[in-house]
Image 1: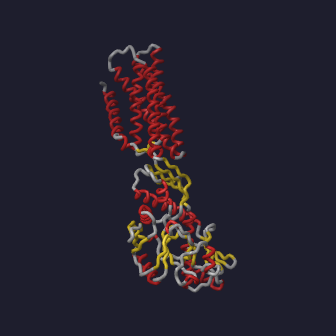
Image 2: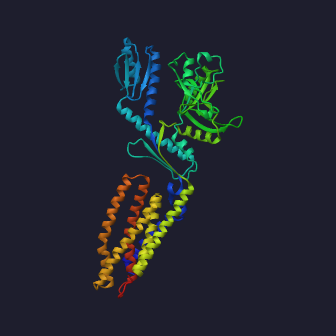
Length: 527
């Protein structure tokens, strides 16, 4: 056997062995997409306005405290999201310089402008951009932590596009999509606020009001400047929705938790026990010590979930009750451990595929692939006789290469991907058809078999390369600008075209050389 034929055979066997190692066993090595395995596909938009609003509110609270220390008079501070600014209403114009000095100390770089009797403080544009960008990145990382802790494998959590506010989530094998959506899309921002009772309810027994208007009426028609009305979550209050007056400020928030874990209460009810950081524990102890006998409210995503009377000073450990099922406590503890999302999210797209539908897709896709393969193989053997078997062997190796390369790269096989595999059947056989017809043409001209085979491969190579290259360019553009299913089709197509070039030009030619042998006369070729 000639040396060049030996190394070609060794290379082909090595490639075949590597690809086989990557796909055996197929059930463990080949990753299936959502449309084949079942699962959930979510496209979320991060509401970055929430992050800007949160920064404005924090700056607002800091300035209110600082102005109070310096006894600077004003009617209140309003946060304006549209202009990313704070408006100090009715400030004392006599003390304008003191106001400006305080603002520059607390918020360096912020623009200050007088608007009539008010002062406007505007966040710099670059800082607004930074806040929005960090909100998306932080949301992405915390969602990834939640999904990872949820215990699923082969999930996808990634940003859609550069500088985009959209996040793509794909989780295969999920049988409870609503639970997953609640887990990844809810901010889970925990706060503790003091219940500020209206004068008429100072004696105790206050259980909220049915409407916000009734609550405001209890305060004489206007809520105090440091009080806001919050609605209770009916899931935590036996279906009852009520409005409660709570302080604006929170001594601690869920972002200051060290740990959170689900547990059972005294009566077997589900609850979440948490521990605070040392600094937050010190503040919480001071707050609860000063408010023994008063009511403390727990809020999750601005909805009231618990109201309890402070019986004693609480330092670092506490618990959240009235949760519901133990599974709800598990999910809440997980969300609290991962940290609250810096902004809320909106579900833009949701697709759910059940496991049974995924199994049907696998069966139908495999059936279609086998049917296409059988028809193609039958035609090649019938039309090209013995040389058709050459094409069938090359085609079989082509399929093995596609699956092996996809498995090696960790790519996911989807239903459009199977369509790409089936399309490469035709592309691979088309290359063999071009070569075989060239060989036939050379043999009709009376050339020897060995010369005809050499000329057939050489003359067909440029045509095969040109057709495959133009298809690859189209597939690359589909992958670059397409969405998930289109990307899967394009990726499989590119791999299939590269594999068909190897099998049709290299492997098929090697088999012809092996059959024709070396130094012996060959007068006929079954083609």
